Amino acid sequence: MTRCDCKAKIVVHKNGSDRWEVKTFVEAHSHNLMSPSKVHCLRSHRHFTDSHKVVMDNMRKAGIGTAKVLNFFTNEAGGPEKMGFIDEDARNALKLQRHDKHGKSAQELLLYFQNKQRNDDNFTYAIQIDNECRLTSCFWADNISKIDYEAFGDVVCFDTTYKTNEFDMPFGPFVGVNHHKQSILFGAGLLFGETIEDFEWLFQSWLQAMGGKLPKAIITDQDPAIAAAIASVFPNTEHRLCMWHIVQKLPEKLGKVINENPSFNNDWRNCVYMCDEEAEFDALWDVNDTTE
Image (cartoon, rainbow, N blue to C red; front, top):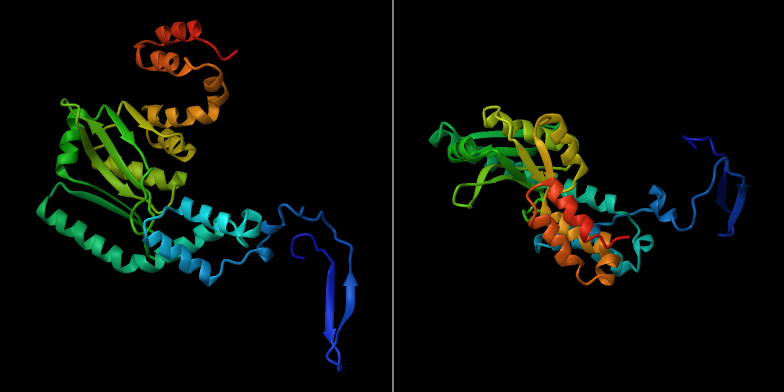
């Protein structure tokens, strides 16, 4: 009614003999109706119940990721159209649960950061709060991280794959490699979400803690929000995609080619791992090209 002034309606009254009677029925709609395959997406047809919340909360406490929790609900119902809610409803409910628990944990985290800073003048932390003064994201880096970054910060890896904490918050470490080929930490953060704004805040906090020194290159997964934030905060830094994530996509993107060409995997790895120059890669790729 509020969007397109649709007059379609049905009015039912109960008469004195305990029978229901249709008083008014207007069939004509002023808009196209939702198809049966999409009707479950309508807000009026979605109900995320308290029992759903209890099951989801117990599964999350057991260490089951949000995606697997949603897959469970989908399989249990017999398909997404039979769940009674959509993924967004479940994720919003999870966010509200996280907000309810954040108060005490946020205070404990802040006290921890303050104690660390009292014992280490070079310890840096930053917190982000929402309009209701609730903590949403945080960042921290100690003196060792800053010293390591000064020496080995030309190339930085950033990833938010892991969400094993109680609040399902993406954990974003800034990682490098030292001269012994050991992984070293340049700082880390916990994010409430994975939007462009969330990543921009984290990158800016990290850059300020590192004295404004930009990395020459940063390696991430294929998240478009991360890519947009890098372009905004690190405009002069080379952005490259993580090889591990690329390899994970091979069966999905090139499954047919791999099945029809058993040698493709070896040929592909030779192109990727045995070439130091772009021209060398192109030449070897052309020799082993079996995608046509």
